[in-house]
Length: 234
Image 1: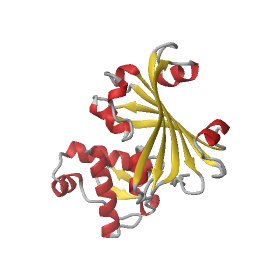
Image 2: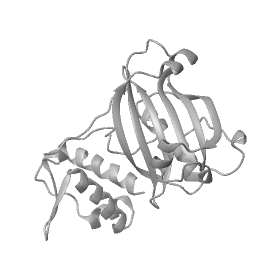
Image 3: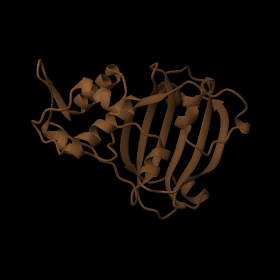
Image 4: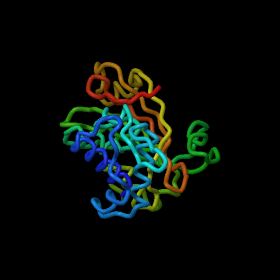
């Protein structure tokens, strides 16, 4: 709900043509416009303040900041699943599940997820296609406890973020690192992914609303087709 109101407020700013220094609609008015509680509006506004899009002046309200007029369609700072990212860019999304298995966490996985080495985990390797072109290779690890039940009876081709939410683990934030790399040679040969150029590797740990680390993801985004936008502040 907060994410939806956050986006709606951004759309309102664009529709009204508000410029830096202009006063934003009040909390009460926004709550009435979107038929939500003031606490929901307040949380959405807090996110905009953190991004520097708006700033509050005590006793006067909130105003559009200089960066508030620079709206990014898919900002890197917003947590989205791969399915959401590709769909938003207009792609017809499909997936190929290359491997899914039960294993025990290695040192890197246990550190990322905050679990003991040797803890049972699920490992998932997929190719995410956009209009039948390979765009993202996803290597995901999650604690076994987050997804109970036989792994062979689950459809792993859809959004993993949505699947986790279905088990009560709503991922709403992550810590991410981005680097330019070549796709591992083994994957290039085994999955016919050679000669596709450099890739952007996004390594991130997804955290639930409760603060649990529930997803360790290493996603390779095809460099010729995928890019990320970031709004920078001084």
